[in-house]
Image (cartoon, rainbow, N blue to C red; front, side, top):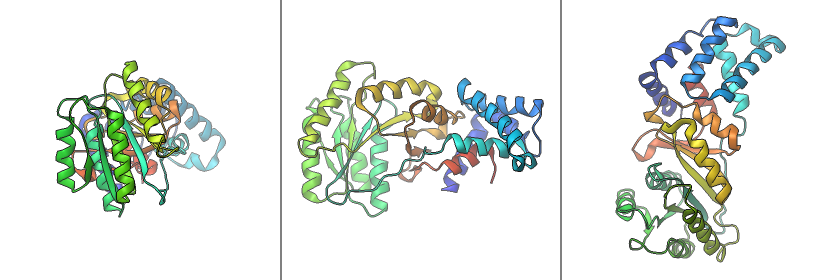
Length: 304
């Protein structure tokens, strides 16, 4: 996992050289007005946002005054300690139910990477000894079926799909029946991603939930929003809309390999308090990995 976030750190260096320069200027420096300004610059460039940046700066100065052991550390180490406290509880953790398939419903707008993420999740579970079925519930987007079928064939993962324009809830129902009948551990549903402001999309998602609950009152056990990490804090509005409409249980942050603004993860977590289950750094199946806050913090502050 450390190697995974090492790639993230390298991407930050390429995409945001000013951030790397600012962070580098904190090593070996104790807390004073100049280093606080340098830290502030770094946090803003990484897209931590105004509120989160101010909180981190305030916490850094407060911790420095109150905790003697922090006074011997440089400001990068203090910042990483404080960020760890802010991200406490951010790592998504779940235990599989062995009696019936766990349903993971992936939500989000078009372009966030839901279809690719669904396939990568299936690959991750398969590598860890769990059988998984994909349900192609995005029956609205052109070529969505072809895309997920290509992934299914490539990764040798079972798939239930239907024709373009079919009822998404019916596909979800058929997928659950197949997952149950075949003894799969997980069912991953790839849903449509029309604009999050559209009422019809939320109604479609609620219909999927109602249909699934005819078979399992707890389904879908996991309702994860897939967010494009390159959008930065703009993703918070998307997250809020989906959370209000569908009741999210977690997040998956994709495309961190293409951004120098990885701090948006912190703002999204602070805003919604939703755990981050997976993060994505590339196109290959293994480029989706569980979120590890300690490795993430090391990538931001370059501390060990």
